[in-house]
Structure formats: structure tokens, C-alpha cells
Length: 415
View 1: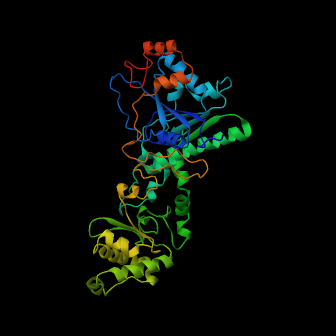
View 2 (view 1 turned 135 degrees about the vertical axis):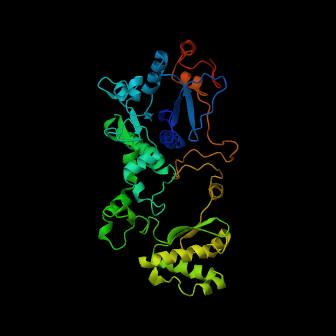
């Protein structure tokens, strides 16, 4: 009988980390992979709940690789796994005795292993062992210099670009590519090397390449890298165009406008002007937007002021009704709670995507209360996992006595 979920039967060992590594593991877990997260043992009797909102569909094994028996157990687990996710700085896994050569080298013990390494900086760069976060990675990628913000400085899109898109998602893609190659060609695993600076550059290929050639086009979309930094916020997609922007309404909620094409801009202008209060349009007799002014950049400042004042005359709900069902490319900016109500899953938790019709992802819990965020107590699956890989009761007791499982027994263990 075929598996219901496409990655069933795949065993993944994910060393606990922050954001990108757990997201890569989540992508695999959501489609059925058996993802075992390796947590650090704690000394507290009450298990500390890891603030990992990406632990859904995973199990947790808390074990210390610095204890010989813990290291031996981890090697046994990895030798019987398909994928390892390493979220640490270069060299950490080697110092633990779990580097890729142990498994994939000439005398490697698991030549089929896909060993995924996810770092912040390029492993060959001078920053390779420095601390960093999303904002630093997108800064070095060249993408931050193109992003909207104010006229004097760019802004950053939370930690989405490097951590999750260029980091976790591309790492998961690399894992799947390596697995496909293993199954269809070589029968061998390999190291998948990903870093968030390079990953951000890759997913940003379009804006980066367009910015390099911006001076060759009459309507650049992004800042011209050959010009001064002041060329930011003057182009179509970098916050410069008033018809690709966000505007506050009378109730301090927002509407997004993205009518780039002339035919959509025409629909927007028609509906916008008709929906404005009569006294507003009469008071603006000196300047009104029309189709001829869309790509006249000298008109953009006045157009932005007109749109901003116009949206401020009414609530977001009013403007939603004005543009509802039209091709004006104008939609409300929803809060996370409002957006979740549009989801077919009926859950506040974002559903796995894309949808596979025949072999879907594991469905989300229908109730937010029954599966709040996927949070796990570190080590709550320790005993079950140790039994699964064949450790006897005596071997499990020895791990506890050695301190490899921490100083206290966690909820879920039977040792």
C-alpha cells in the first residue's frame, strides 16, 4: 500500500537550532518524514518548553554528545537515518565527533546519508565563524540595499528573507534534490552545503540582476546599483511608485495598492475617484490623477499625496467594499488573525504548502487549542526513540547513569 504522505519512511535527525534549521525540518516533517530533533538535556525536573514554534510533527530526543555513551547512541541513530540537519557554525559538528566524514568519508558508516549543513555565512568566506542574524545576512547579500524604507535608509522584512526563504526553505530543497539524486542515480548520500547569504542572493535573483541593468531601461523596478544610494525609493517596486504602496485609512488600518499595469491602474483610478467624498475631489481641483500620469515620475510625489489623503477619508472596511471583486489590485492589509480566517485549514497555524492532491501533507489540527504551536518539552520522546533504534533497557539505564540524558528524568521517559 502506498504511503499517504510523500515522505513517510524517511528518517531525519535535526539538531536543535533557531529558525532556519527547524524550518527545514518542519518542511520535511509536514510531508510525513520522521523528524527527530536532538535537544540538549536539562537539569530541571520540570521540562523547559523550547520556544520552537516549528516543532510540529517532530519528536524530541534529549541527549548529550559530549558524553561517550551519548555520542555512540547518536552515531547509531544517524547511521540508521536518511538525513542530518546541522544548524551550527562551521566546525561544531566536527568537534562533537559527528562531522560528515564520519558517515560519508572513505570509511564512512552511512554512505547514503544526506548531510545538510545550514550556516549564516559562506563556509569559505572570511565571516564563516562570526556571529550573525538575518539582518546581517541580507545586508551582505546586497538585497537590503534595494529594499523600501525611508528615503535615507532601507528597512528589513522581519527575519523572513535569510532565515526562512534563503535559509530553511532552500536547505529543504537541497535535501530533497540530494535524496532524488540518491534514489534515481548514485545510491549515495552527500553533503548539502547551504548558507543564508548565498541563499538570499539566489531567491533575489530577479531584483539583483534587474538592479544591475537598471540604467539601461527607462522604467527601472529597483535602485540602480551604478547610481548613488539616493536612487532608492524612486523606482517602481522599491517604494517609489505611488501605485505600488500601502496607505493608512481613517481607522489607521491599511490598504495595499499594486496596480502596476495600465489596465489595472485605470480600474483603480476610476473606482478610487468615484468613492472619494465630493468635497474632497472639489478641494483637489488643482491636481487629479489620470492615466497619462502613471509613468510620469515627476507626477509621483503629487500622486502619492493625493492617494494618501484620499484613503484617509474613509475606513479600511469602506475601501474593501469599493475594490471588492475588481481588478484594481487593491486589497486590505490583514492582521495575522484576520488572515487565518481565510485559511481552508481553519487553524491559526499556517498550513503546509503547496498542496499535493494524491499524497498530501499531514493535516493541521482543526482546533488551535488542541495543537497550539507545536511546542515540545525537550526529551519528551527520548525513551521511545531509544527503543526504536534498538537500545535495551540496560543500555538506556547506562545512558542515564552516565549523565548523557541529563541529571533528571523528563516527562515521557520510562527510565
